[in-house]
Length: 145
Image (cartoon, rainbow, N blue to C red):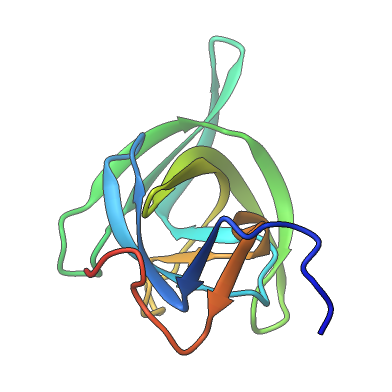
């Protein structure tokens, strides 16, 4: 067997509890090695310019439709064309924020999209999984929900 070209920082399961401290959110994220970009559930997404900076405002729910809505106003990091799992491409706003996963803390880019019909409000894609190993048969290795 070939050796890894790096030392893995951690082993994670197919689902993990993560915290986005700047947003004050703790939520269940699905780990998806097939997705390049991570995604966060967002509704009422609007971009605007203020004081020569681009911003995006959106509403999210950390635990599904029955949980209280959180409204955010965040610096807009980027706007990208993202292909969804059904093969359709769409332009999405991207924010950058710190992520806590167990003992790990690092910045992550999140595309904002309506995940209302999905089981998990957040998806962790390959860019957020650098130097992590995924154990697909395990869940919540870094904390129970």
